[in-house]
Length: 421
Ligand code: HAM
Image (tube, rainbow, N blue to C red; front, top):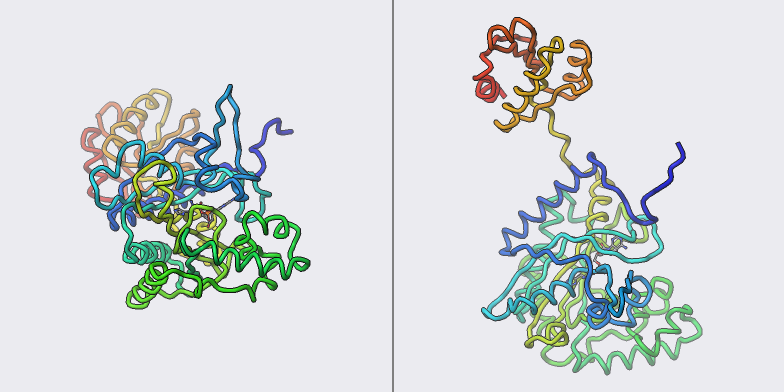
């Protein structure tokens, strides 16, 4: 058959067998967020394009090259290319700051980036996100990093397969001098930089630091440490001593500047040593203490993380971490003869309402073929309905493990089966 329509490049269907894995990691994420005091937020897929231009930044790759923008009349919308800006927009729109105190919000969202697809990099992908508003202390950074590492651990990913990389990129007060130092370094090495970095040296010099092509050259770029203001230095030192006390292993990565403009101070990523190839970042995040104010709200320190769901699943599979198998059926109802088929459906309904996973044949197959289906679906019990059973208001229940058979009244079927599961 020649297919007329296919999913778009870089976009994927998730079929039932994979959905099981998705549901598993999603439920882990939800449970994890509950333990850390987060409430769920769901934001629309479409937002005004300007929201991302103002927050992620017009010079970022995400906005300048990858964003899907739709024009409708005068309005410009974007398919969300990330989850943080919409959450900040909602935080402001609903006045979530008005009660004071700390707000913790988590989400599971698709996002869209028109990148060149490859392993672990898609045009529609999904993120587990968490954002904390109103907490300036490094305690919040440390708690977020603990939550992220614990989450990966709870999925059975061994600590030695992951590396937490940590950096600080200072604040609007101290970063300009550092940016200048990196620009000078870039100018001195201009001819060795890739074309992309040569072009962005003027507008966004820090981005040369996380360019994979220029990795060897930027190894000798100046670190930020001597440029940090006292507050940024104290924050970063505070965070590092908390991580040591909490025994969260990390490596300092001077070049981790992240590709989104809203970050201040802490930036981090977790990379996987196996399963991802070139796209090895499982998650990324950091502080964005100026963003709420930039978008028109009160000064509000904030921080968060985005975890790539597809990449998490790739690593789980590569490391053969334990994953759930499809739950078997509890019951398969087998009709002997056409008269029994409507009763079989009624009984299946009765069992399903009693929370038993139940199936039956819908194609008019022979009893033998129905029994084969029951076995193939891994059903624990077959409920057999023939003329004799219909006449007496009973069912013959066959335990497909022990092959024992019992006559059970139709009315008591669900409780009889439940006590034997
Ligand atoms: P990000 O680093 O752009 O950060 O994305 C977070 C994670 O999403 C990445 O580490 C990666 O696992 C996954 N990811 C990114 N792009 C793709 C793609 N094309 N295909 C598959 N997976 C991908 C953010 O988006 C920030 N909003 C994170 C954040 C939250 N910062 C503060 N709060």
